Image 1: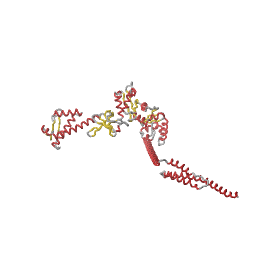
Image 2: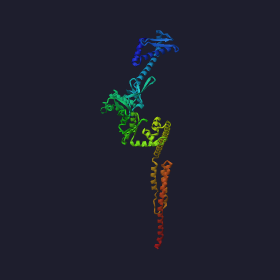
Image 3: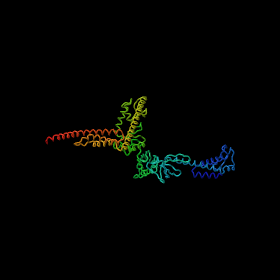
Image 4: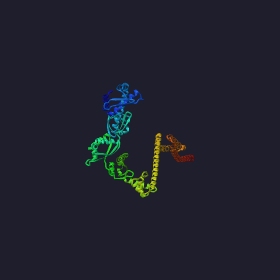
Length: 512
């Protein structure tokens, strides 16, 4: 192997694989070194060097240089095969490192690819040099990808996996919206309009706050485009996701009402000690400000970086009264101090337990020991409220479980207890009414017998002991009423029979 051939091989690998020449030279030296150790043994001290300019190979065995003939024998068929395997391995590692560095720089950037396959929700996308994956968790809810579809996503993660590079893509990351704005809106890509903040719930809604350095340009209008042409392209790429574009302002008093759109805000109360903002709205704007499942206020909180609590004026007044009364129960807190704490946004014992001692000293004028005692009492009350809340939730879960078991029991029996009792009672009452005859009194016991039959029929359709007892009591009551009704006709029948006997006794005398 002459120097010219070595230089030609190094240059070809450098151009085809985009690998640095120094890495290729190092790989060839390692391959020759491996072949020499296989030929001379591991115990020998071997050194191999390739001239970077001429490509000439030189080797030393125990500090003794090898001549060209011995070097040629060293690079024979078997040694050349070993050297080839080592070179291939080194080249693959170098190629992997090159691809890794390239896509590591593209992290959070937008890339395009073609879907090659989809297996159990995991989509494989061909990016050209490598094949990336788009997990199910990083796909927009409800969307599906077929083989051959083009996909745009951001690079979420890049890591080495053996001799390969694993690239994970995402279509749910907020940076996807940011990159789409840069692609579809020239003013954003030229940095004339800047995306100051972004909050997103993939597949449902996003809020984007933009600002412009040129006062002659409307930042919101430029992002929307003529008749919504620009924003429509982004919405279509995101599978119909709703995007709210708001105007950024450094003042929270202006930014928060913008972030709460489309709801109208009446007042904004800042609580800097807790990083909380109280937004007051009218009653008819409350549901619109909160949004579906709290989505609007949640995205607005992410957009401005503050916790937003939406209230009406009446709710705020009630909360203030409850908080002042609750804080008054803590030893050492006066009414004035309680009102001062509430005015700073401390509404619960949990809020009071995390107050900074310096702030409490500033508000109250107490010593550090007194402030510590107040905070300890607040922590105790907060834990008690937490235990009560957990207990209440446990009782609610138990009540729901009992309701489900009762519903399952009703489904098994076919009908519920009140319906069976209501149907059985009139039936037993109708069957227990005696038929009064002029000459027969033997139907006296008929209501009791019929009531027992009705009780047996209803009890056969009820499984539980309590249901049987309830139906038995109802049937006994009906039987008692039937018996009392049968006593009156009995007396009438006896009286009629006595009258007939008297007429029979008197009739012979009249004839005689």
